Amino acid sequence: MKNPENRFKSALRAGRHQIGIWNAIGGNLVPELLAGCGFDWVVVDTEHSPVDVTDVLPALQAIAGYPQVSAIVRPAFNDPVLIKRILDLGAQTLLLPYIQSVEEAEAAVRAVRYPPAGIRGVAGLTRASRFGAVDRYTETAEAEICLLLQVETAIALDRLEEIATVEGVEGIFIGPSDLAASMGHPGAPGHPEVVAAIEDAIGRLKKVNVPAGILTLDEDFARRCMELGTLFTAVGIDLGVLAKGVRSLRSRF
Image 1 (cartoon, rainbow, N blue to C red):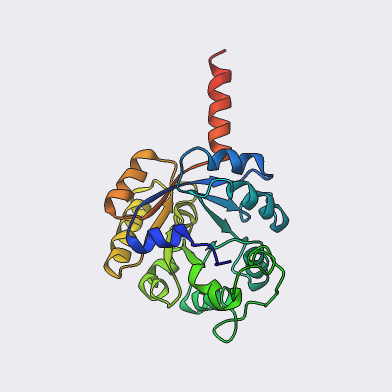
Image 2 (image 1 turned 90 degrees about the horizontal axis):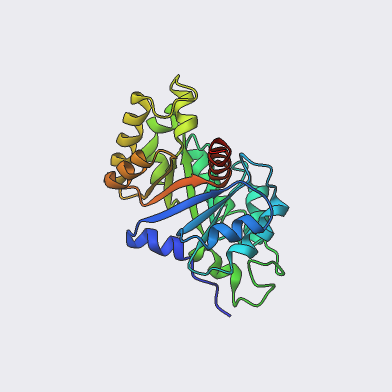
């Protein structure tokens, strides 16, 4: 058996834009629902949600029923142990939060690669290797793993090109909320200074030929980012969609 193709990574490299949505509600029902709604990718978030590493497995299994949809997992931190466990569960694309330096980016690359190129621990009977059925998994895994890094502070933006061009990094995700806080505008990702910094970052990433991504619930700004060149744009969060819908329903009665 061959290692499955990472469709998300292939699309990034081909320059095809992909629309995504955030999954912060644990279990398998909501990820399955989201996967059937026509998005290109679904983020299973373990950073800002109650979802833990063990909850990632049922989410990945649910999304796998929709092979046209890519599952992305966000670990809670750039931690090689968390990364190892999530990769062994079968995640092929990781979104690592709060990367602040070239050194942290290089550490992330090492964490997703087997020795001698990295430090990922080797285990034979994992879901990632289809429990040993994938031919030469340890030799081929790297080709289908996609590493995305979150740049979400003013300090990180100052080092954007250096972080983005670390070998092994496939894309940079700009985090508006943390960026706003680091710029002195907590809770205001739409502040003009923050918006200007994001727009500038997208342009800078385009110049160094590194795919840019973002999550924004502002539909107009999402379209603006796409016009500027983001290649992976998330436009909603399951909890937010649920809360907005329920509140709207209640207000009508």
